[in-house]
Image 1 (tube, rainbow, N blue to C red):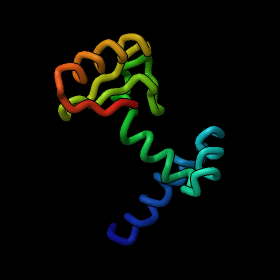
Image 2: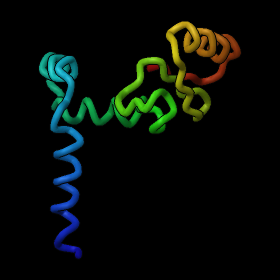
Image 3: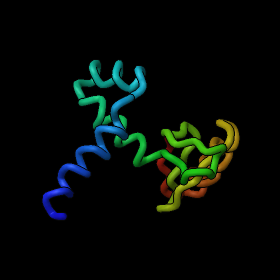
Image 4: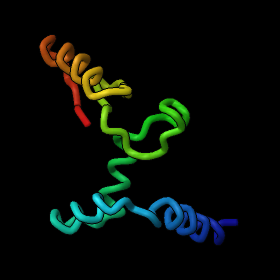
Length: 96
């Protein structure tokens, strides 16, 4: 089983990143960052839990991490309103 783990790991990640969206590839070239790494970071930081937003399983643009809690919004305006509240109250809030 231990010998199988590296193969399973490679298979899993090759399937996950086989189709990095074109705009991530374009940015990766310009910023000199591997596209798979850039996309992996975007997924880690802004992918909503599966099923939370119509089954979306990709990075979500209206994402906030405020005071260590992740928030996912259906619209830019909703995210803006909550981010404004956190920022004006002096709390930590990561956007995007």
